[in-house]
Length: 194
Image (cartoon, rainbow, N blue to C red; front, top):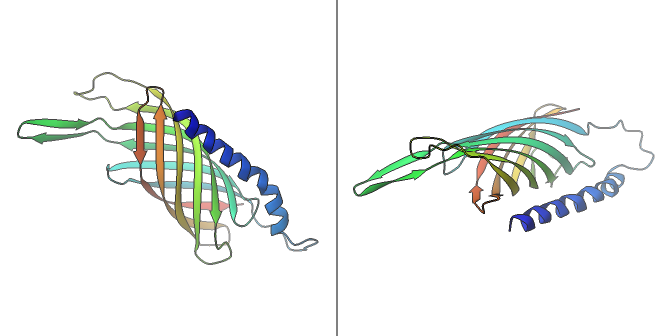
C-alpha cells in the first residue's frame, strides 16, 4: 500500500506539472503589454491536529504558472502529545509523536480573480517519524515515512502581494513496519508573493 500511495501521488504531480506550461500560455493573452504578475511565493502556516490536540507548522516555496494553479515545495512538522486515560479496570495509552516531512503539493484555485477564492490541494512526500518517549514507551525509535494528502481551503488577499489562507487536509502516512497514521489538521497562514 505504501508504494502504491507514493507512486500514485507522484504520477498525479507529474501530470499536472507538465500541463502547467500549456495552462500558462492560455492564461496570458498573446502580445499583452500587461506587466508580469508575481509568480513565486513564500508561505508560513500553523494549525492544530483535530481530534488529537496536537500542533503543526509548515513553510513552503511556491510557483504559480497560472492564476489558478500553484506548485509548492513544503517542509512540515507535526506533533501529537502522548495521552494516558485511566479506567476502573485498567488504562489506555496513546504514544503520540513528531513527524517531519518534505512534500510537493499542487493547489488549484477556482475563482482566482475574486476577493475570496476556494481551492483544492493534493500532495505527497517523505520524511521521518519519532514516536514520543515516556514511562510507558521508554525506547526511542525513528521511522522513515511516506506521506500522501488532499484537502481544500480558501485564500483571501490582504494586499497586492500578501494573502491569508485557511485549509484542512486528510493526511495518510505509512512506514516500513506497515504502521499507518491518519490525520486531519486545520491550518491558517500567510503567503507573500514576489
